[in-house]
Image 1 (tube, rainbow, N blue to C red):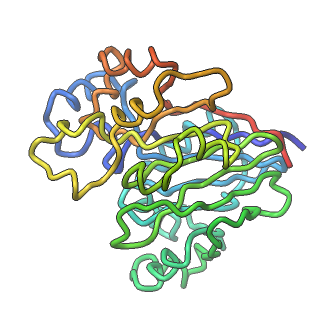
Image 2: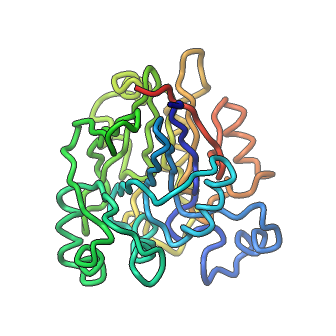
Length: 294
């Protein structure tokens, strides 16, 4: 038996970086330097028994599996898949588990009741279930579950307000022995998420040691041609104002789910320098964290 390893497989918003169809400097820079490429948010987890668990199903599964294999040479078929909500970048790789590509057999899909209902009402996803490629298993909010027997960790799905036109949304608290990792790539606002707490108080209540936070936009001026009330996320600037500088005893907080326009995608930007000067960090593909098995 081994400890549990969590690997970051994607750090971008739904469209990835560079984003399809974007001819702006932010994406031209990435096309000229493949090392700057970012894939839609995803995590890979190898359990204490060698079982393999994927969080989110993006269109970039092929590239993301290569990242995962480079960190943790996993073997055999995927054990489970968990999906936080139904927005594009978290689900548009689901079809790859069908017979036309990976040909999965009875893959356990952990999700909320509203997402499971969406599967039944979405013909391509319903066909995956009929084929036996996926087997939805609904979780109960705020109740920890073991993704597979003997995996050595649990997942606690925490309901988080975020645009629910398709399904509800959950952050996932991945729980090991004495170390918990919070994956929260999407939420509408800190006021709705915290409900009167501070970020530090909320993380302390959840016993979070590592947090991967929504960093979709740097500030409200980032997309002047778009109404950001239609794509709600707290900005990184707001998060930094609330957090201030990292203090002794704070969790390891890393930011992900970057939109292609976010200046944090440019490692030489003053925004990256500001983030790092406060003691926080950006998540990168290939980052890995070890949790002692339960």
